[in-house]
Image (tube, rainbow, N blue to C red):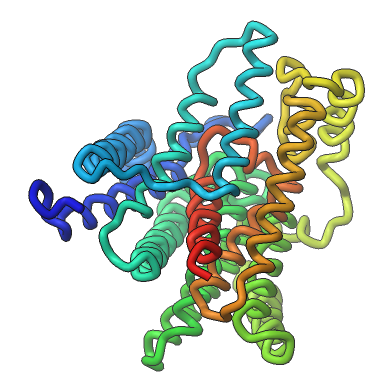
Length: 395
């Protein structure tokens, strides 16, 4: 592949750098008012990045599409998408059909399908061992994770008045739940290097970065993100070590959580209020009731025109696409679970991507991450189920 027309190393680097740009552009959100929170402004550096996220997305996706086109043209080989990806695409396609039935025409859902295909295929066309390809991907995502954490702390340090609202941290996103959710989904990649690093100083470094990640999640006040973090840790440890060592590992994570919570470090963040984490108030009950009612009265094909919020991806699918969407999402979940169960080897790479997949599915119970047209969480989900599909085919 690309032996005559494209230098392998350059083309591989182009794919990984494009994915890195895609991670950055899909995580930094434009500043927005949040209910009565008032206008927000980023510091100069973050503002420059946020104002060009669309350009970065177009650039990265264009490069990936061009490389994919050249690969297919030269090799006459189209990478095969696994059943999980195909079912996810079918669900997206059905939602487009429903929108057309309601005379709603928008290009975004169609672009979402195209983006999913490009992202999944971009890794599959690499002319290196597929496990090495995903191992490099883990390194790229980890670099991005560290970069993302640093940017958020930089914004807190330079522009603290614009990153908090009612005691909750927005960071460089436009909602605390986005920031917390992204961090929780990125946590398995840090754990990969904490476990895998042989060098003592590197291990300490990644533990410190992980601790900084935990503090940011606390500052968001997002209970769903904190729960997702715990779920991702449990899944990764269990998949890699089994029950016995998982107990010890979870004790380690809980210790880090307790150290973060009781260390008094949050006293240094005067605008922070983490008391929400211990609240039992259900702030999503109204949205859940609304989505349930939409599905109840439009159970056949749903009614996307009535959906105003998507704080539960699974109910949002039902409200937008009716019983057909419900069947498709049920099949998607079953196929993913089947492929995970069929994994017989206990290697850290398997555990990492399985952890991301399950934690994303769990997080989607509380947020519209799965039903969104384009987001960092969904990109990580697509890459993770692509990996799980490759592993299943190799066994």
